[in-house]
Amino acid sequence: MTRGRALAMLGAVAMLLAGCATTAPETEATEAAIPDTRVGVTAAWVLEVMNADRDTTVQQWEGRLHEDFTAQVSADEVAELINVQIRPARPLVPTAYRGTESEAVVTVEGSIGEPFDLSLVVDDDDRITGMLLGPVTPEREPAASLDEVEERLAALPGETRALVLRDGETVIERDADAASPIGSMFKLYVLDAVAEAVTAGRTAWDAPLTITDDIRSLPSGELQDAPTGTTVTVREAAEKMIAISDNTATDLLIAHVGRGAVEAAVARLDHHAPSLLAPFPTTREFFALLWGDDEDLVATWGDGDEQERRAVLAELAERPFTVTVADADDEPRWPEGLEWFASARDIAAAHDALAERAASDDAVATALTANPGLALDAAAWPTIAFKGGSSPGVLAGSWRAQAEDGTAVTVVVLSSDPDSPITSETQAELFGLVEDVYTLLP
Image 1: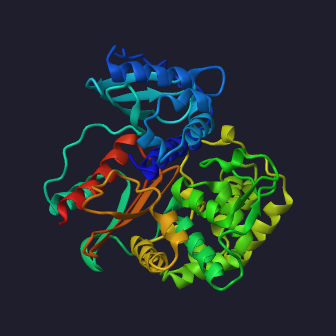
Image 2: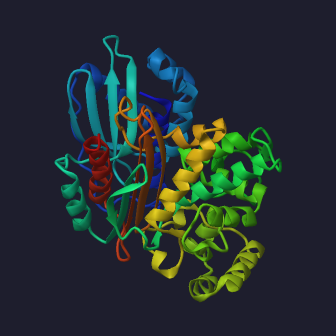
């Protein structure tokens, strides 16, 4: 279990919760029985902690987590992430269970968001050595060849664009030059803008950033719940922005380096049409347009040129931000322009440029590799840079994995549906096919 994988899965659940309104499901979940095995007893305890009236504490977890686990993810981090990102969905009901004496996967349904899987591994002393919380992963048959990967990508609902490169050479290409909604993948451009500002001496990785009410955004992440006046360093914000897709951290960084610096990064990283991301909205601005009462501005944004869109953002700044998670719905609005847009080739180019920065900048390397996104074979691919993204009707993922011999394989998948949200089945198949690529390529 690595720190990146634990935090990645917890962040993935937060992403699912953030994209849904806080309303109870129409049908009551059927509770599955949890057996009285060693791991089953632990799973029941974890669910009890998540459903308790009071937040979980560090003390509750300290005796339950193996020291190898806490060496990567502390009990304090586990408690904080569960309190902030998981417990708001309670009551949490186990709807399916499969496992052995020491390993189990429990599918859990909450009052908001999509169901998720709680995966646990315990040792002979019943201490937790592995814990993942992520999207439900229905069993699937792996692709037997790269040709089959291409066929199954084409069979997915909605529009699926994809690009697989090995040392720059094309392995799989599917509409790789077409602009698509990318969700939080836009944060790669913010990271480059920040790294460029550090290189130029305009800021430093240890420079402090202060959370204010006019910066605070919505989940995913955790800084949206931090008290006003809380400070984090530029490095900490960058790590949270990439590893757990923290939106408030993202907006802190955009405000710090300036919107123009991010727009310059878009062009510097060879985006095929930088005008698609000019002006470059913050997550707070995006949520205001997506779920606020500003339909007049939404219409202007959808039809407007760059100057008109900048005027929209200026007007938004004068209006109160009243959007909450409760206002969120799952209606795809990216066809109206409410998204960030890039092609699969654009994102691959961004990964290449950031890999060059990471070679000489530990802060960039740490941010990119803290969350591998998938449980890829770490022995085969010891360095894995990842950034994903989602919004209503959008699911995207991008990886640049490097082998010991220097071979680099980049995979970008962009799925979008103008009529309906992306289902958990589509997500499992899309990201499963990414795993297949990294398994099939030597």
